[in-house]
Amino acid sequence: MDPVGLNVQMAEVRALCDAKGFSASEERIWEMLALIHSEISEATDCYKKGGSYEEVGTELIDAIIRILHLLSALGLDAQQLYEDKMAKNWARPYKYNTVRGG
Ligand SMILES: [Mg+2]
Image (cartoon, rainbow, N blue to C red; front, side, top):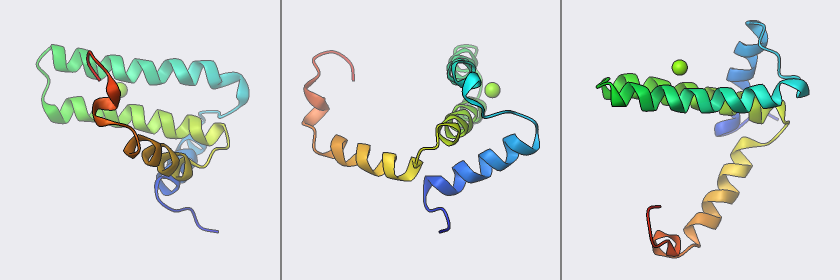
């Protein structure tokens, strides 16, 4: 069955990472989690230093790429997880009943 939704991008990211020599083996999971953090930090630093929205966005896309790579390494269905989580979030109350932030 052909991938749908986010699984299309996940398969593309996995193919790229495999082709470029970036392993998706289980012993890299800690590293992959840390690298997701690093991309968010890069986006934060870029914004802080006055980078353009496009530059900030590029770092955020890096984070998405790394997240999709990790979801692939974990053998997960990204599209299904997304749909399930969005359904849960739509069912939550306004601002999810948070008092500060959100
Ligand atoms: Mg980056």
